Length: 113
Image (cartoon, one colour):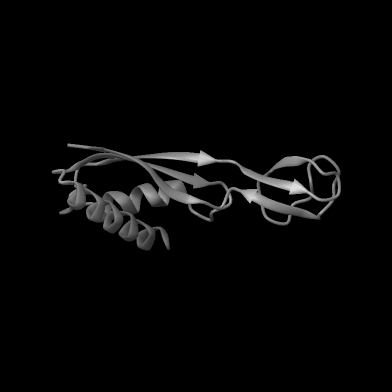
């Protein structure tokens, strides 16, 4: 379950940012996660709840915003939605596409006190 190590990194980043800016605690965290990022949202929620204890985000709620996978198909020259790596283009059936988005994971916003 790599979500546990992801949450450790999230808490570390949050803690650093909150201390640098002089806030007391984190109330809510918004994460953007791409559909193709190989992150299981429910496992991430579980890991976040376990990792946040005794940190500046001890009572913080986690909000996950799912970002769709998008690719540019070289065969039909269209931008298309993709749900998995190596799927064919949903428009032309070609396999020659370049991934544009969907693998990202970032902290979008924090609600702090």
